[in-house]
Amino acid sequence: MKILRFIALILFLLLPGQLCADDFASQYYDLREKEVRQFSAELFAAGEYYRSITEARRYLFLFPKGPRTEEIARRIGDAYLMSHEWGEAITAYDEFLARFPESPLVGTATFHKAIALLKLGHTAEAERLFQLILSGPDRSIKGLAARWEILLLIRQNRFDEAEKLLRDRMLRPEIETEAGRIEELLREKRGVRYKSPETAGILSAILPGSGQFYNGRNQDGTYSLFLNALFILAAYKAYDSDNYALGGILTLFELGWYTGGIYGAVGGAHKYNRGIDEDHFRSGIQRLNLRETEIGRPGGVSVMFTYPF
Image: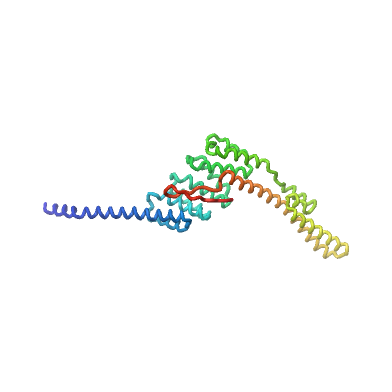
């Protein structure tokens, strides 16, 4: 009995100390977690994105199951996006989506990844993500995704698909305020008059420089016409003077200018058409209010991210 009483006394004396130590450790954990999290947020708000990423990674290492782990993991992608590091942003968002597939932040992470893909020129993959958002449950980002998807379809002259999205009853409420402007963009793009690369090439084959004039590149057309005429005249004079060696050399140069003019006219028509598409696309971005989006951070505050194309 004495032994049992002694053990009980020891436990009685040690137990409060253990409880105090556990309580202190818990408080220190909470304070440290909050400190690292807030420091990362403050750096992000101040535009020090790389330092914010460092603190965010520190948080994920120290508190892998912390209360704000999902938010911090997504912030890494947001910080790369804000600093226009598109490839790194995509990688960070991929890591977030793989680690937290059920997170309520999946929709915005997917959307921002699509924007980074667009900046890298991966239009088809960005489209796939916008379509994924449109078919998902997150309504907070659907309107933006729908406007981007419709604008991309218009840029590619896929008018029927764009109109189908515009008429979608489930999607219409999300884009109702921009519906009139979208219809206007559709009408304008349908009425665009493109240059025919085939016509430009044939014209330059018939008369050097005329394909460039057709493309609206009058200075290039003038140079092409002048140089071809000059080499043809020089070759003719050489042959007329029985200087066949010089005539042959000048003829080779003329053939180079002639065929180069044809290829230049064809390429010029393609460039003209791409310019129309890109000008209309950039105009659509402005008219549909797609130049800016908000990236949120703790405390209900947001920072504005601009991505002009």
